[in-house]
Image 1: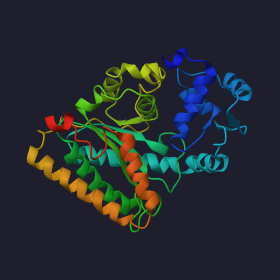
Image 2: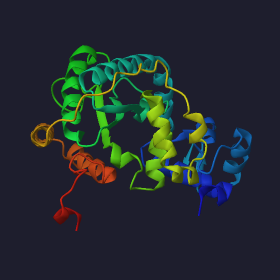
Image 3: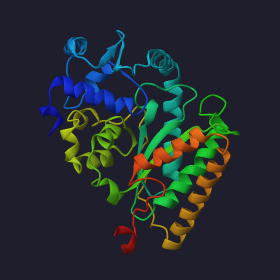
Length: 303
């Protein structure tokens, strides 16, 4: 059943559950624009929240019963106003450099806290990237190596400090190949919520094409087809057409390099079992689009 056919209370609870799974609560204003089944007026939501059981509301933030994070969310809301301009500048600069270095990039989208109005200086900047078929690992390695330069350049100001050494400023959240994104094999609320909260930084036309190829998302968030029909702030200019795709050998080598880099990160987190557990959980949530998910599995792997 489409979300629009559910009651307002069910739509509110469902939206809050999606936000909760990512560790944050919503203001009524954000709930209004991100509501499952389409937007609703803030005052209508306020009345529904006050009379609905199973929710907590502190006057600003609303969450599922017992899961309200007022202090954390208020701190993020305040920090976002101060630090988001820098995060956007860094994201745009990185997208320009990535497109210049990696001609296989189709689209770059801002995601995570910088796209959902909760950015803090101790956050990294999450990006979702779409690349040409057959270039996932070559593009991923290029993006990861480029991110090291940004850690050195901006790590004193922003970035997560979960590991010893240089802070992580850029996080490559997911890399999709063309055939994975147009259309997506997954068709669930979590993936639709991810795209709803993503802002195109590079190649708006491709982003629109991706939405059009995934019309099923309108069953969850019909508003995304209207509100995301524009570039994000300071959109990156279009690049010239990409060169030929890398050979299979180069792609295989890049895959091994990426796995080795992941192993280094795993080793650096040896004393933090909570972070290791988080890494495993994140990869499970991303399936079938995680680092270890081959976009071109063999016949044996598909069976």
